[in-house]
Image 1 (cartoon, one colour):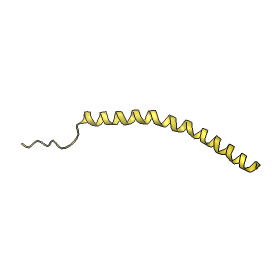
Image 2: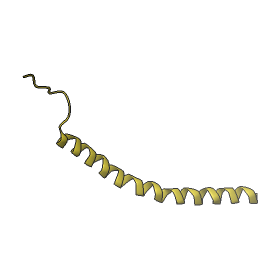
Image 3: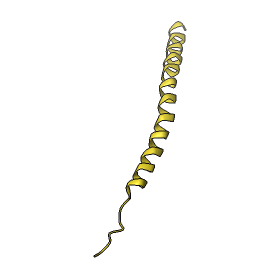
Image 4: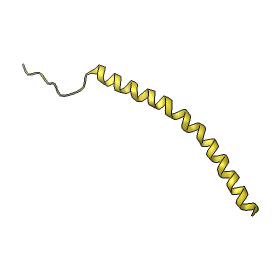
Length: 52
């Protein structure tokens, strides 16, 4: 019987998915928090240009 060693085990796949999940959990809240800050600065810049 031939053994096929090409491929990933379930444990390896779970570890990779866990690492990706942790990175997403850390990155997404930071992006959503910056969105409001960028929007506010853009509005301030637009108001300053309109006044001049």
